[in-house]
Image (cartoon, rainbow, N blue to C red):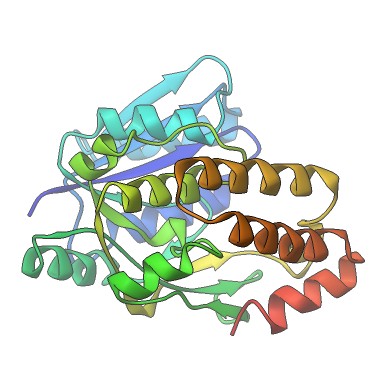
Length: 271
Protein backbone atom coordinates (compact mmCIF):
# COMPACT_ATOMS: atom_id res chain seq x y z
CA UNK A 1 0.00 0.00 0.00
CA UNK A 2 1.74 3.16 -1.21
CA UNK A 3 1.41 6.33 0.83
CA UNK A 4 2.52 9.95 1.14
CA UNK A 5 3.76 11.82 4.22
CA UNK A 6 2.60 15.42 4.58
CA UNK A 7 4.67 17.98 6.51
CA UNK A 8 4.60 21.77 6.67
CA UNK A 9 7.51 23.98 7.73
CA UNK A 10 7.87 27.73 8.32
CA UNK A 11 10.71 30.05 9.20
CA UNK A 12 10.42 29.94 13.00
CA UNK A 13 11.09 26.22 13.26
CA UNK A 14 14.27 24.70 14.66
CA UNK A 15 16.54 23.19 11.98
CA UNK A 16 17.75 20.41 14.29
CA UNK A 17 14.18 19.45 15.19
CA UNK A 18 13.26 19.38 11.49
CA UNK A 19 16.16 17.02 10.76
CA UNK A 20 15.18 14.65 13.56
CA UNK A 21 11.54 14.66 12.41
CA UNK A 22 12.44 13.86 8.79
CA UNK A 23 14.90 11.15 9.89
CA UNK A 24 12.16 9.49 11.93
CA UNK A 25 9.90 9.48 8.87
CA UNK A 26 12.52 8.08 6.52
CA UNK A 27 13.83 5.41 8.92
CA UNK A 28 10.50 3.62 9.29
CA UNK A 29 9.92 -0.11 9.10
CA UNK A 30 7.39 0.71 6.34
CA UNK A 31 8.90 3.51 4.31
CA UNK A 32 6.90 6.29 2.60
CA UNK A 33 6.72 6.46 -1.18
CA UNK A 34 6.57 10.25 -1.13
CA UNK A 35 7.18 13.08 1.32
CA UNK A 36 5.26 16.27 0.50
CA UNK A 37 6.92 19.18 2.29
CA UNK A 38 5.12 22.52 2.25
CA UNK A 39 7.35 25.55 2.68
CA UNK A 40 4.88 27.95 4.25
CA UNK A 41 6.63 31.17 3.29
CA UNK A 42 10.30 32.05 3.00
CA UNK A 43 12.53 29.87 5.19
CA UNK A 44 15.83 30.62 6.91
CA UNK A 45 19.06 29.61 5.17
CA UNK A 46 19.57 26.90 7.80
CA UNK A 47 16.18 25.32 7.15
CA UNK A 48 16.63 25.51 3.38
CA UNK A 49 20.04 23.86 3.65
CA UNK A 50 18.58 20.90 5.50
CA UNK A 51 15.68 20.54 3.06
CA UNK A 52 18.02 20.69 0.07
CA UNK A 53 20.32 18.06 1.59
CA UNK A 54 17.45 15.61 1.87
CA UNK A 55 16.20 16.37 -1.65
CA UNK A 56 19.66 15.59 -3.04
CA UNK A 57 20.22 12.50 -0.89
CA UNK A 58 16.81 10.94 -1.54
CA UNK A 59 16.25 11.61 -5.20
CA UNK A 60 12.58 11.61 -6.17
CA UNK A 61 11.26 11.07 -2.63
CA UNK A 62 10.47 14.70 -1.81
CA UNK A 63 7.84 16.90 -3.44
CA UNK A 64 8.11 20.56 -2.45
CA UNK A 65 5.13 22.91 -2.33
CA UNK A 66 6.37 26.45 -1.81
CA UNK A 67 4.58 29.68 -0.85
CA UNK A 68 6.25 33.05 -1.24
CA UNK A 69 4.48 34.27 1.91
CA UNK A 70 3.29 32.54 5.06
CA UNK A 71 -0.31 31.37 4.52
CA UNK A 72 -0.95 29.58 7.81
CA UNK A 73 -1.28 25.88 8.57
CA UNK A 74 -4.82 25.46 7.23
CA UNK A 75 -3.97 26.63 3.70
CA UNK A 76 -0.55 24.95 3.76
CA UNK A 77 -2.05 21.56 4.56
CA UNK A 78 -4.95 22.05 2.17
CA UNK A 79 -2.53 22.54 -0.72
CA UNK A 80 -0.31 19.78 0.62
CA UNK A 81 -3.16 17.26 0.61
CA UNK A 82 -4.00 18.17 -2.98
CA UNK A 83 -0.33 17.71 -3.95
CA UNK A 84 -0.09 14.20 -2.48
CA UNK A 85 0.12 11.53 -5.16
CA UNK A 86 -1.27 8.65 -3.09
CA UNK A 87 -4.65 8.14 -1.47
CA UNK A 88 -3.13 7.24 1.90
CA UNK A 89 -1.55 10.25 3.64
CA UNK A 90 0.31 10.32 6.95
CA UNK A 91 0.61 13.64 8.78
CA UNK A 92 3.78 14.51 10.62
CA UNK A 93 4.87 17.67 12.41
CA UNK A 94 8.33 19.05 11.76
CA UNK A 95 9.44 19.05 15.40
CA UNK A 96 8.18 15.65 16.56
CA UNK A 97 9.62 12.14 16.34
CA UNK A 98 7.74 9.14 14.99
CA UNK A 99 8.21 5.71 16.54
CA UNK A 100 10.01 3.47 14.03
CA UNK A 101 7.00 1.20 13.30
CA UNK A 102 4.32 3.90 13.36
CA UNK A 103 3.44 3.68 9.66
CA UNK A 104 3.53 -0.11 9.67
CA UNK A 105 0.94 -0.29 12.44
CA UNK A 106 -1.34 2.30 10.89
CA UNK A 107 -1.19 0.78 7.41
CA UNK A 108 -2.15 -2.57 8.93
CA UNK A 109 -5.34 -1.00 10.31
CA UNK A 110 -6.21 0.58 6.95
CA UNK A 111 -5.44 -2.62 5.00
CA UNK A 112 -7.61 -4.75 7.25
CA UNK A 113 -10.43 -2.21 7.59
CA UNK A 114 -11.28 -0.68 4.23
CA UNK A 115 -14.12 1.33 5.80
CA UNK A 116 -11.79 3.16 8.22
CA UNK A 117 -10.91 6.61 6.86
CA UNK A 118 -8.54 7.87 9.56
CA UNK A 119 -6.36 6.26 12.20
CA UNK A 120 -4.36 8.03 14.89
CA UNK A 121 -2.69 7.10 18.19
CA UNK A 122 -1.65 8.29 21.62
CA UNK A 123 1.37 10.58 22.02
CA UNK A 124 4.11 10.95 24.60
CA UNK A 125 4.86 14.62 25.19
CA UNK A 126 8.52 15.29 25.96
CA UNK A 127 10.88 18.16 26.64
CA UNK A 128 14.46 18.20 25.41
CA UNK A 129 15.13 14.47 25.18
CA UNK A 130 12.57 11.76 24.35
CA UNK A 131 13.42 10.06 27.63
CA UNK A 132 12.12 13.11 29.49
CA UNK A 133 8.40 12.38 29.15
CA UNK A 134 6.17 15.05 30.69
CA UNK A 135 2.78 13.54 29.91
CA UNK A 136 0.81 11.15 27.72
CA UNK A 137 -2.20 12.29 25.73
CA UNK A 138 -4.57 9.38 25.35
CA UNK A 139 -7.51 9.61 23.00
CA UNK A 140 -10.63 7.44 22.53
CA UNK A 141 -10.07 4.31 20.45
CA UNK A 142 -13.17 3.14 18.62
CA UNK A 143 -15.45 5.00 16.22
CA UNK A 144 -18.33 5.49 18.63
CA UNK A 145 -16.12 6.76 21.45
CA UNK A 146 -14.20 9.10 19.12
CA UNK A 147 -17.37 10.74 17.81
CA UNK A 148 -18.80 11.13 21.31
CA UNK A 149 -15.55 12.60 22.64
CA UNK A 150 -15.34 15.01 19.68
CA UNK A 151 -18.32 16.92 21.04
CA UNK A 152 -16.09 18.00 23.95
CA UNK A 153 -12.48 17.85 22.81
CA UNK A 154 -10.25 17.08 19.85
CA UNK A 155 -10.39 13.27 19.45
CA UNK A 156 -7.10 12.92 17.55
CA UNK A 157 -3.49 13.89 18.06
CA UNK A 158 -2.94 15.64 14.74
CA UNK A 159 0.73 14.67 14.33
CA UNK A 160 -0.23 10.98 14.54
CA UNK A 161 -2.99 10.66 11.96
CA UNK A 162 -2.97 8.67 8.73
CA UNK A 163 -6.03 9.14 6.53
CA UNK A 164 -7.53 8.48 3.14
CA UNK A 165 -7.16 11.49 0.87
CA UNK A 166 -10.61 11.01 -0.65
CA UNK A 167 -12.31 11.18 2.76
CA UNK A 168 -10.48 14.41 3.60
CA UNK A 169 -11.28 16.02 0.24
CA UNK A 170 -14.93 14.90 0.44
CA UNK A 171 -15.21 16.65 3.83
CA UNK A 172 -13.90 19.90 2.39
CA UNK A 173 -10.17 19.41 3.11
CA UNK A 174 -8.29 21.53 5.64
CA UNK A 175 -9.60 25.06 6.05
CA UNK A 176 -8.23 28.07 7.94
CA UNK A 177 -9.30 27.85 11.59
CA UNK A 178 -6.66 29.28 13.91
CA UNK A 179 -5.13 26.57 16.17
CA UNK A 180 -7.98 24.22 15.21
CA UNK A 181 -7.43 23.35 11.54
CA UNK A 182 -7.37 19.65 12.40
CA UNK A 183 -10.27 19.57 14.87
CA UNK A 184 -12.51 21.43 12.43
CA UNK A 185 -11.64 18.87 9.72
CA UNK A 186 -12.34 15.86 11.97
CA UNK A 187 -15.80 17.18 12.81
CA UNK A 188 -16.62 17.72 9.15
CA UNK A 189 -15.43 14.18 8.46
CA UNK A 190 -17.69 12.93 11.25
CA UNK A 191 -20.62 14.80 9.72
CA UNK A 192 -19.70 13.12 6.42
CA UNK A 193 -19.94 9.64 8.02
CA UNK A 194 -16.22 8.84 8.01
CA UNK A 195 -15.23 5.89 10.17
CA UNK A 196 -12.44 6.52 12.69
CA UNK A 197 -9.98 4.66 14.89
CA UNK A 198 -7.10 5.36 17.27
CA UNK A 199 -4.41 2.80 18.04
CA UNK A 200 -4.10 2.64 21.84
CA UNK A 201 -0.32 3.06 21.79
CA UNK A 202 2.07 6.00 21.72
CA UNK A 203 3.35 6.14 18.14
CA UNK A 204 4.75 9.68 18.18
CA UNK A 205 6.97 11.58 20.60
CA UNK A 206 5.52 15.11 20.60
CA UNK A 207 7.94 17.90 21.46
CA UNK A 208 6.59 20.26 24.09
CA UNK A 209 7.70 22.13 27.16
CA UNK A 210 6.48 22.72 30.66
CA UNK A 211 5.58 26.29 29.72
CA UNK A 212 3.56 25.34 26.62
CA UNK A 213 0.48 24.43 28.62
CA UNK A 214 0.79 27.65 30.61
CA UNK A 215 0.76 29.75 27.43
CA UNK A 216 -2.57 28.37 26.23
CA UNK A 217 -4.52 31.15 27.84
CA UNK A 218 -5.78 34.66 27.38
CA UNK A 219 -8.64 36.34 25.55
CA UNK A 220 -7.37 35.38 22.08
CA UNK A 221 -7.74 31.73 22.99
CA UNK A 222 -11.19 32.42 24.43
CA UNK A 223 -12.28 34.10 21.19
CA UNK A 224 -10.94 31.24 19.06
CA UNK A 225 -12.71 28.67 21.26
CA UNK A 226 -16.03 30.50 20.93
CA UNK A 227 -15.67 30.80 17.15
CA UNK A 228 -14.99 27.08 16.75
CA UNK A 229 -17.82 26.01 19.04
CA UNK A 230 -20.16 28.35 17.14
CA UNK A 231 -19.19 26.57 13.91
CA UNK A 232 -19.99 23.21 15.51
CA UNK A 233 -23.35 24.57 16.71
CA UNK A 234 -24.23 25.96 13.28
CA UNK A 235 -23.30 22.62 11.67
CA UNK A 236 -25.67 20.80 14.00
CA UNK A 237 -22.80 18.81 15.50
CA UNK A 238 -23.47 19.98 19.06
CA UNK A 239 -26.57 21.18 20.89
CA UNK A 240 -26.95 24.65 22.37
CA UNK A 241 -26.52 23.20 25.87
CA UNK A 242 -23.29 21.50 24.83
CA UNK A 243 -22.15 24.75 23.21
CA UNK A 244 -22.66 26.60 26.50
CA UNK A 245 -21.01 23.95 28.65
CA UNK A 246 -18.01 23.73 26.32
CA UNK A 247 -17.53 27.50 26.37
CA UNK A 248 -17.82 27.66 30.17
CA UNK A 249 -15.29 24.86 30.69
CA UNK A 250 -12.83 26.11 28.09
CA UNK A 251 -13.02 29.73 29.19
CA UNK A 252 -12.42 28.67 32.80
CA UNK A 253 -9.16 27.00 31.78
CA UNK A 254 -8.10 29.91 29.55
CA UNK A 255 -8.47 32.65 32.17
CA UNK A 256 -6.93 31.00 35.22
CA UNK A 257 -3.32 31.89 36.17
CA UNK A 258 -0.64 30.38 33.92
CA UNK A 259 0.92 28.10 36.53
CA UNK A 260 -2.46 26.71 37.50
CA UNK A 261 -3.35 26.16 33.83
CA UNK A 262 -0.12 24.21 33.38
CA UNK A 263 -1.07 22.02 36.34
CA UNK A 264 -4.58 21.43 34.94
CA UNK A 265 -3.25 20.33 31.56
CA UNK A 266 -0.61 18.02 32.96
CA UNK A 267 -2.68 16.51 35.76
CA UNK A 268 -6.31 16.62 34.58
CA UNK A 269 -6.18 16.77 30.77
CA UNK A 270 -3.27 14.33 30.35
CA UNK A 271 -2.32 10.98 31.81
